Length: 133
View 1: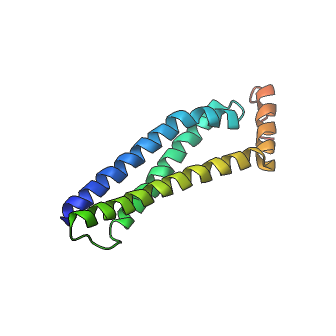
View 2: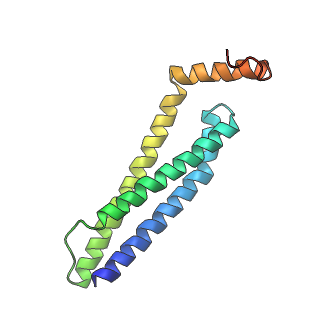
View 3: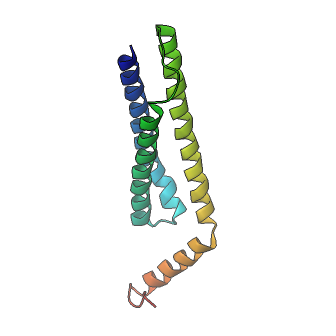
């Protein structure tokens, strides 16, 4: 019974993680391009890095959480076991999403972003020449 429960847990958790990651990657691009003031290459690069980090953290959590919890002995226990573990994965996914959104919005209003944006604008005006200065 435990092997089947673990397999269902892994299938659900990994499936949800993949779906959420792809949805955020696809639909988050518009937000990132806006957040980085039209710098599409930067937005795409950060979008990809966020996706990789998202997968690494969530896959690690799913793997670590596999071991913990009271092992079910019957079908009702198996459903409770699965709902607890999958529910925790979903809560972690949501928390990570809102944390990333908060950090990106915070970065947009930071002094560092303004300095980088000014550097990028001056580089564009010079045609990339002398941007090192």
